[in-house]
Length: 282
Image 1: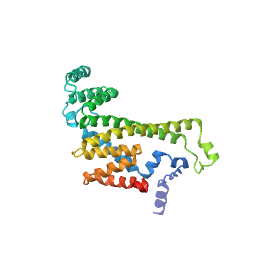
Image 2: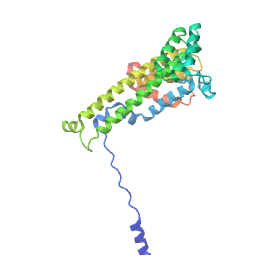
Image 3: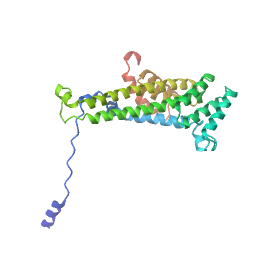
Image 4: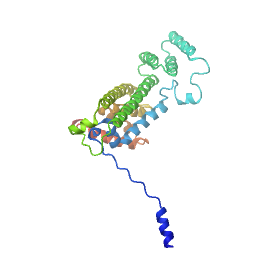
């Protein structure tokens, strides 16, 4: 029995050595996306959910009046080519320049063709005809929001590429002259510049989305759509760095939808945002 126990001990597999956790370099502490990942991972998850819910609830970017149209297969009403449909809608607008449905349909056709410039131009014309039309403003906000999300992903990818190219040896003091010399090189400098530019582009894109959602929230005031509009506005403003607008929108959301499934996350986000505001503006 002693021989068998000794043999069992010899055959027992050894535990793999534990990997040492890499110390976070000093420069990484100041970068935008790593700081968010460490301090408030759930905030980005919550914001992504906000925009996803908005796309479904409002029918944003679909070229239809809502998700029900898509489920029914009424996206463009049959097998007619999009170019023929576009000409039909253009003629309908020429006959009746106040036909908002025709503008929306034409914009949807352009979106189907992935021509967002024409879609936005069409929607802007509709906005001049009906400045407070919810469907028009919602479609405009949806396009800007979709563009902003793409810029946000690009900014995150640029940040990741920069970090991967600037991994420093464990224990290296990157604040010292030697540490900076070792951890810096022309290629990583290019990546750093690209990351900073991508971040600025993202902020600019979310600023446009925020402006569009402000109009949408105003048009939705007092309706069943206001809560979602305020939530979308708050999310865009938060990423754009407009903390005051984000706080006001989140506060309004909680006032009109206190029992929403998102209410707890909104309250937590609101507390963090208020804490970041100057004392005089809280």
